[in-house]
Length: 90
Image 1 (cartoon, rainbow, N blue to C red):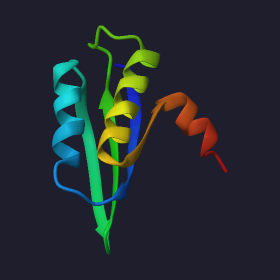
Image 2: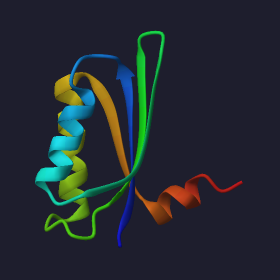
Image 3: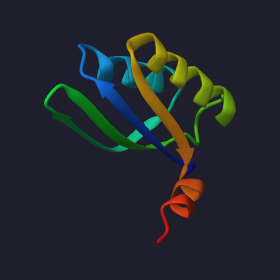
């Protein structure tokens, strides 16, 4: 299993979850956990996914999903679990 953390933040619009999840499904990435909230007009989502069955290298997948965020007006960050944990260690 290759756990990856995906965060999505931006102005709420129709289809954010659909576009992100469609990309993940098309690339054999399984969603393990997902949390999303909308505060006033701002959308925030965090996903833990398993990218172990994807044929795409991490860098390519990260670039492509960030491009989806640019197209829909949100910021998407993709981090491998070990890097995410290191960055958020107290």
